[in-house]
Image (cartoon, rainbow, N blue to C red; front, side):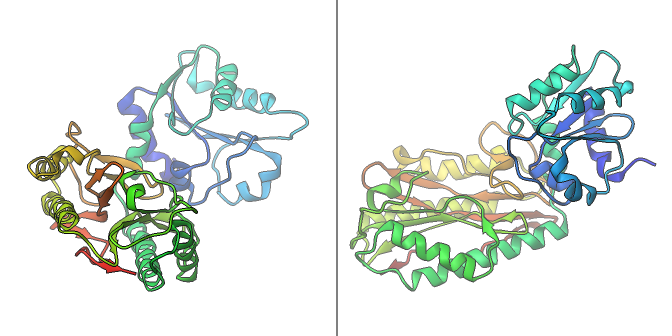
Length: 369
């Protein structure tokens, strides 16, 4: 009997005319097997053919861990001193059904060059294809269990942000505030970070992917932007809120309110049956029709789950239809370079009735410090 874990992959291979897919540890691996392995200099590769059982190439030191996966096919273990070439050759022999004209789909945004080269040596004449879209499609719609884990990651994140804001004071550095946020994330139950947090004030807030500075002390009138998320059992939150320190000018208040209006419009537009293009177009029109149109820089959002950036991409030109179970961000922003940046980011779930906004942290302009 075919292992049900691989059925969605086999459907995608049929649709894409692929003979096999190859995986390394990462989010797709975790989605299939329920656990993950660290990436290091030792290749661990699973090959899933369109017909028949999968085959694995596994470092010998992972024997105990890998045995817990209840893997249905042959496993070729290898030791450091012997190298992995023979294990890959054994995997090729174990897959005679692939024949000589083999089309492999790869996780092109994940697999490293030396792993692809090992496959190429073991399967001479094979054609390797970027199958990222086909592979990621197996986890684009979240199960109820996955949504529950994401909700907990978001709850932890929001509680940590609320606690952090109680400690913010004029004169602190971005790095000091970041350290408070990190402490609060783990104090509230995070088991990891979705990504390196962004805590950016003043001119640094106008850099969408800023790094926290140790030599800048926040002062009255500064924007103070937090972009961060907790990890809970592998599932991630991604939240951005922007505050102002001690005071806010009328100009910056209008700047903020424009972003808030765009965020509200994006959440209102998102529902099953509309396209990602339509949601982004709605958001961008709010920004483009404002007095701050010149300061818009990026799309509305991205999918969120085991990866902090995954499908669907909420952007103009992506006419893929939103479906029940998809989770993505709505995060419009405006950035006056050298002065001020504002971004407001929420995580939303598409339901059969519209959307459920998984984030609930207040969005109204707030003065801190």
